[in-house]
Image (cartoon, rainbow, N blue to C red; front, side, top):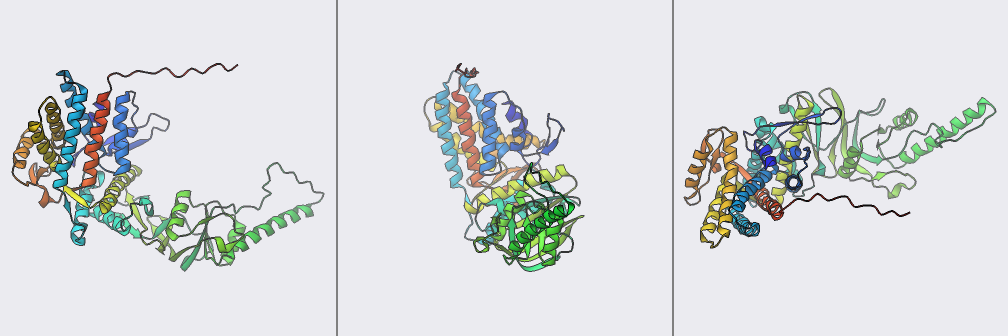
Length: 500
């Protein structure tokens, strides 16, 4: 439960951030609001607590957002369960009750989802709302409209695939967060070499991972004994010739841009420049893989048969300036959905956190594009679920009803915490909210900005149904798992037999 209390304060639009300082050398510092990032960095001895950390990780991989809510909900379920166990109710009974309650809660949400996938304008505004809701608890909340716009554009370019590989996020310190922009195409964080063409139209790109530095004899431990300096010159000439042949093979592919992962010595670079080919060296591996993916080429390492190598294509390669740095920009690439988001910001920490928040938003949006159901946010879904679960508890005979009742209390904890974090009177607000929800089809939720109840429909606070569903189900399962445990045994490591 201590873990749930730790991330509790980061929940909601008025949630606080945490600074994580690593105990290792270098004392690196991370400032973050993302539940999964915080929990990943904790050193935890208690095995039960590790379960909570795991669910937040899974939530992060699965849907991207809601990492804090999962842990908080699971923590609340355990807190309620502890009270029940003290009342001499068997854990299995509690688990059975929780099962029924979770099922009921999910159905309650299903009944109230909205789906606008047929109407593109409405769907886009839904996506914008979801992005803004996701970003409002993060560092980007000041410019959330701007970043929501970026995220929605990037995801709609993907046309329904959830492969976020083709959205590249580049971080460049300097400027302010407002200077960030979305660029179609691909940006490689490299300078263009000397004496090479600065812009190429209709480029054929060969992406390679090969050594272009064989001016030296590369056989390790090789000793060459020569009896005169002239022989040394011969050896060097032979090496040069070998290099020249390799370069000619590469040029034989009919390319005008060569991107290599390893370094290119000045002699081959000179040859490329004479042939009018743009050669880029030392592109980092991620950049290379993504470039190959985006331009539709393969990564080659041998050049003997040019017909079997797939070249990448793009309409235009040029050099652009971002802040102080020069970068190479590939536009009009073969894979139409690719784009690059360039983030600017005051410092590395701001940029890292901005990247995490944006990544959350992108994940949620790409999931929503495939599963288009949307619900309101701001504590509304929890109240809807808790109301239905409450009614179920009244109908259920036996001890299970206590557990179901507890589940509905735990659900109400999330809006309570959102209100607490905003320094509002949570008890007052939640009771008002409960009364509102007993009216049919109410859309009331907590409006943190004005500090009272607000209409979620008018405020445009939405969440993806998939995220909420994942939260409820994962939290219940994790709580169940911890409840099933009656004691923690530390195992001795297995003894190795003496095999003498």
